[in-house]
Image 1 (cartoon, rainbow, N blue to C red):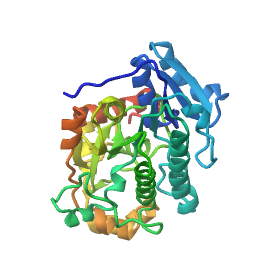
Image 2 (image 1 turned 60 degrees about the horizontal axis):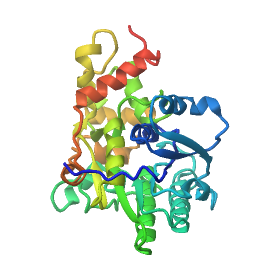
Image 3 (image 1 turned 45 degrees about the vertical axis):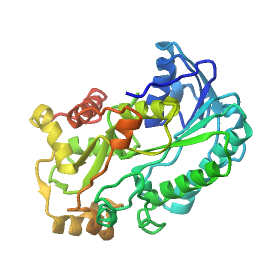
Image 4 (image 1 turned 180 degrees about the vertical axis):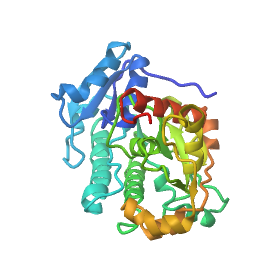
Length: 356
């Protein structure tokens, strides 16, 4: 397994620190004894920061909060000052938006550029770890048919998404391309990118508005009782993703893009992981909906499930190659059962789903 070289004398920066993924990254860095410069919208909002303060209290590291806004030039400079490694996780993850350019693309792309401007302005920075996405590799499962190896891997880029179709995926693609353009224009710091698939698993707190929490909640609250579409996904545990970030930051030879995905799976298989423990008390979906039913009713159930999305994803598998992350970062991935059951248990504990 590749060894990490962690410089504990220099602080590190994590953007969007109150986010679902970022929380676990902050915890992992604090557990290593590092000083973490965490960017948030409002450093004075004690309630929103409480879960991170609790993590800090149990860890040897130190946490410092800085105000930052993705769309405000210069707002990352104070947080990045003096840092060796910068982790850029801040980016909107929403499927249903009014204005894709304003709500998704602008904050993703401009936020990345503003963060990298801060890296360029601070000579202490030697590495930037960007949280991109498998969405920058593909837009629809049908894209798999166009890949050279029949797999989504680091060589593949999403060319099928646009503002009109899979706008979230388009935003992640544009942001990562902007990052590589800026990285290639300089030689002082190295850009290392992690490309996670669908992130699942318990948060440091319940992130009620996240898409991941919506999926697991709907599997237990009756929304999906009639069945789930046969739609393929990659899934990675949020705790494994945090580990991948740490390794991307501190494995000396880490470079380029990395598919971070533990499992090629699907909605039916994800639900199946929950049935042994929770199926007798919660309306965990048992049926796989036929494609014609998803075609007819999907757009009424979810605005993001338009008929083009259904056509290009339902009945199409997801297959990704995570071998680079295993070989170069030393990644090992939790079982899908552990991820799904730990996640559902958190919702049960917090009353987000009710037993029948």
